[in-house]
Image (tube, rainbow, N blue to C red; front, side, top):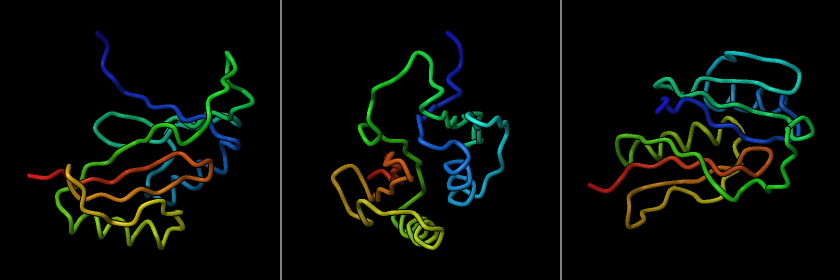
Length: 122
């Protein structure tokens, strides 16, 4: 089986979403065209931002029905990432919260895609 290396989100404006993720994550663009942008997420995994009107075959899916998650070391790292993302303009759907599976918060990108930061429970 091939290695997993790309998550693609369908977005209204690939360039605007690219600017959001570059600011939020502090990462550069790896590849760009007017309607498709790729940014590195780490460990060889990339984030693709594909402008919805260019997706083939067309998709009727709605943003927010799934999420991308980032693992951090502990609850303190969850809080620190939350504070950083707040200053970088992320909309917050769930503030830092202790849940049965660990400490977490959820942000939303401009299209409503869910972005979870999580420190799993020991």
